[in-house]
Length: 113
Image 1: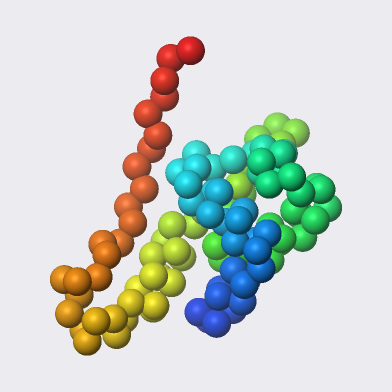
Image 2: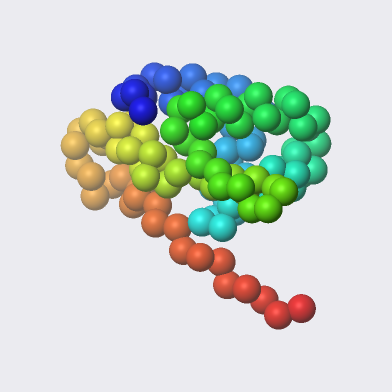
């Protein structure tokens, strides 16, 4: 895969629906979400969502895996952390103690039903 610049990643997030989809995946944690669930939650038609997810995939922000007849998408936390690092590289006059810590996602606790 070609090298993806921070500008390309930021451009991918510069659309309300793509940003909403990415935030949803980040919040979902390492398990991610099925494409159908993303579509339902964001109330986006499947073709529109597919187009937005393709832009996020191309930017390296989203990875997916086929599970039977569905596709599960996950945020690429390594890429997210690289972007956060780029954005905070010169933050606060290089006083990194005043910058927020890098996100380390934890698996969600399953609740019994």
